[in-house]
Image (tube, rainbow, N blue to C red):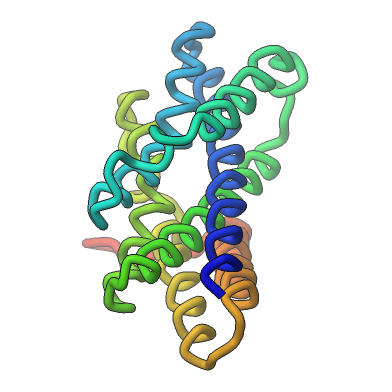
Length: 208
């Protein structure tokens, strides 16, 4: 079982790194950054949540700084966006939302799974999963001098929390870690996509 969860965590973590690396690079194009700025933003978006997660649970140095594959995947994602920028600039908004939602779901699952491996209480694991999912986006938005999307977007952190809760519940039901990750990630992804489509938002002060 540990070998299965280790492989699952590694695969999901790398996939999330790729998706958020691409998403960060696409945001850099919108911010009119040069090649270096684009790669920095791609890496910051790809690594931000994972580094915060690893520091919180005591896995030091963070995984993305110990394994060259993380850097390679993030840089490859960012570089592909740079060299294909003519096509990327015409990317429809819904596709960018899909990439972002996929990265959110993958990192929410990876963060929850790693917290459980480090014997965190399930409630804390859910919070770690949420932080992992949204952390990179917060770093990205701060570097672009924007209000972080997690504080203003349609059901963003809530989607990560919900996916993490579903994952924990499935694990408690004694289904395999793979099924738990798949179901939790799918719920997170679908909730994020549906919230954008239906314009769902959490209540705001003065709204009525």
